[in-house]
Image (cartoon, rainbow, N blue to C red):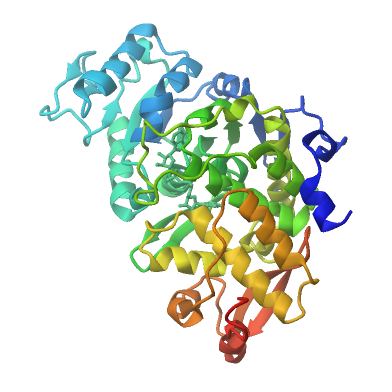
Length: 451
Ligand SMILES: NC(=O)c1ccc[n+]([C@@H]2O[C@H](COP(=O)([O-])OP(=O)(O)OC[C@H]3O[C@@H](n4cnc5c(N)ncnc54)[C@H](O)[C@@H]3O)[C@@H](O)[C@H]2O)c1
């Protein structure tokens, strides 16, 4: 099919007949490992929690936005006693800051009590049947700024106070920030405890919640401290997307476009058909702040949403299964990320969202590679046309000198050079090594108007 035809196909024709929209389960098996885990997609996904919790207790980690919007749904899925549930609700609505349950009695404690955990944590008494198997709830400030050592230390303190053992479970309930941070806390706590990912942003649903990469940022760079720690399960409840602001929605769409470009050309028309008509982002000021008045979309009502999530996830699943530790094909998932991370980091993590950085990075690297004859002609225009239809800005000319320091700090940079991901044609990504001595020449912009 020609590129133009693909971009203009209608939704029904675009959905491959091989996709079973009813099917909501993916089984993740990492090569060479006995363990495997399930990814459940759909309205019943949260029902798996009871099975996962058999014989275990859990500590929930979330952020303030997600907890305020969806904590209730999670409590229902955990089948908490209505009284416990009321106490948790009151904590959010009345006290608005701190409430914890006494480990020695079942009373609510005031913020000044020494029994309290750090602000915005709840400690539950394990023998308190109202709380079933819930040990603690840690609610962190939302946004990338929380993916740091300070919040990690705070989680460890909560785990100490809650008495989290190796038999227990951490539940990461939020976007990619909570998934990465809670995942790293679980990976390092007692040399590793199990964790379940319940992603609530599109980016986390289609990308960050699977694959086992968990990390925190340092002031010197993103994701510099981390581990590979696969979750015990991933539960994807598409209704959470209905409250996601459109700017954050686009972050997930950028990762889906990335997946389509490296492995699955047919995915791109599906993405366009579902997301082409989204409104423009409302605010560029504060990506991390959830503006409750900002209109959101009924994403869970989109006709093909489960099939779309499943198909996008399948790409990451297949790549990670074959190459967990990123020695081969997993590198393809970094398409757009070297320049994208650099642009994101240069702005101090807050000016651009992760997805906006990736969208820029994909455009820059594909313009360069096409100019060098390393991509089929038209690949760059195809990508940029799709991104524009999805509401992304056309990338400005690449200012490599401004990003160079950040690119050289990239984790993919070694003494011998850098590996970048290029697109031969839509659906076909490949790894392209650049020797250290050639880095400047590779990124040198020959035709500023075009790059
Ligand atoms: N581990 C991996 O493989 C991997 C892959 C890609 C990205 N990441 C990481 O993921 C992070 C970005 O993830 P993100 O975009 O989800 O960021 P995020 O977790 O900060 O979420 C973005 C914003 O959306 C809010 N939010 C989340 N779900 C919501 C919902 N249902 N309704 C309303 N608001 C909601 C959050 O509170 C936050 O303010 C980055 O730190 C990035 O490095 C990790």
